[in-house]
Length: 159
Image: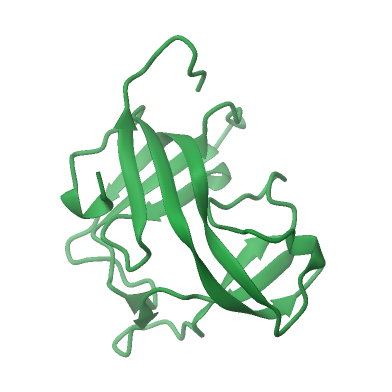
C-alpha cells in the first residue's frame, strides 16, 4: 500500500516502509552529517521558513541519531559534489506517535503534510523520557515515493 491510500495509522502499528533509491548530490559533509540536495518536493514559497532544499543525514546511520533515509554509499566516504543514491531500505518500524494537522503543517517544503507518523525501528529500544526525540518522521502524502504496509503483529517482531 502506498502512502497515498492513507489508512488510519495508530500508535503501536508495525509498518514495513521503503523508498526506491534516487540520485542526488552531496552538498556538505561534517563530522556528524552528510547534507544532500533533497530530490523530492520543492521549496514552499509561502512558508515562514527559508528551507534551502537540503536534507541532513547522520554520518553514523545506526547511531543515537538515525534516519529512515540513507545513502546507498557509506556516508563516511562521501564528499561535497559527489553523486549518491538516497532512499529507504525496507525497514520494519513501530509507530510511537501520530500527528494530524489542519491546516497542513508548514515545513518549508511542498506538499505541506497533514499527517505525521513518528516511528522507531523494530528492535531499537525506547529511551526513557521523550522517545519522540529518538524517532524519525514519515510525512503522509509527501513528495518522496514512500511505500508503507501495515504488518500484523507476531511473536517474532519485537518492538
